[in-house]
Length: 343
Image 1 (cartoon, rainbow, N blue to C red):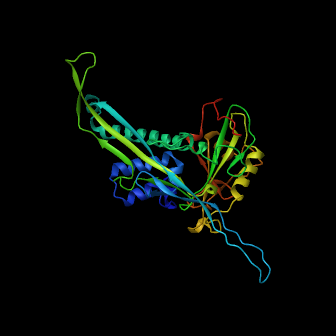
Image 2 (spheres, rainbow, N blue to C red):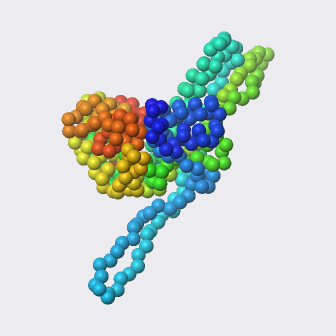
Image 3 (cartoon, rainbow, N blue to C red):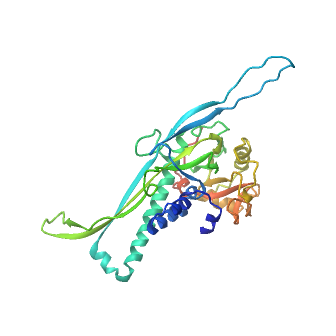
């Protein structure tokens, strides 16, 4: 996975390296990107309002008018929508009796490093779940999930497309144009470590809850992750809904047709540049594991998946057209507990 960083620009890991974050936090940031493909692929930028990011989206482009020579013409203007994007704050703690750690002996550092990796991977997957499945309305502690946002919450065949699947194992895939001028993650610029925290707390004395005359000494490591996402242009994100992803389902022709429609229905910034030469807009399709596996295995002859290095990372990756296929565990669900059919 590390080779993918050669093509990455301004993702959480590459920005963290420039901020002088200590080695342990840099390792955690790398693990976050390994566990969450979106963190690896999308740019990360400082929010312009501390824990919030405000801006405008283009809602309507100006147009010209056909006139006769010497005739009159009117004026026009772009129309914009104001937006405010918030952040989530996720925290967790690891507690362990000091005696247990001492028993690890020379392996103590390795034992704690494994816990670091486990906590970071779990929190990174939690980040991805919040991003996709988050709240219906924003609040101070969380963000609105993509599948609950307008215009992705209902089928309109423009931003949310119907792949015609039915049954109890429906999933959604997300097509994202990873241009930092279109969609990017945000962090609080006043936070010294970009919202990533790992703090080893002082040892503390824990009294036995069933016998106040007994005690033991404990150590605690506090973890925190704070981030948000900003979609500056709705055309940069498309939802492919109602994908049948059960064990016996195969990627359908409807899925391929909707993917191509979603890819080419709109033109975005950078579409005319070549991503393999450092410019342009790379697109990623984030898929649940089952659909990803079947695509990569070539389960359906109607869908042409090629392994190609004609992408921003310049390494061989599975692609359809100019779209990199990415597996995202947050899009997975237990068997027979899929998404409600999107209408």
